[in-house]
Length: 157
Image (cartoon, rainbow, N blue to C red; front, side, top):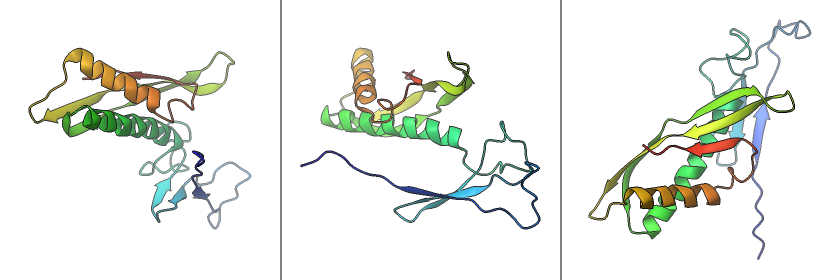
């Protein structure tokens, strides 16, 4: 049996009536559609392309990148915690990504810092070293962390 899986997303953009486009003054608002039927409003980051040509109320690729890394880490953390007999009641991560110039002089996401805050229930609570091991295992297993060259650090809270 193959362990290869394919995932799809549709990214759709359309020029708005009246936008010249060649003057670079056009909306970057677009939509991401996923196989489960979810449609997400998306745009360039307002930090890169100022409004009104970006949509501040939409997800941008940089935010999505950080959220995807955070979610991947969380899902593997929950998996390992459950296998080890810990009951996780709540997991909140206020992840932060830092953009800048990489060694080749290209703008890149240089680092993503995950800052998970976890609330445990039940009788068994992990000691500090066990919590660190759970995060380490989650990081090692995270498909996305294994797929990027960005430094991904975990600073458990």
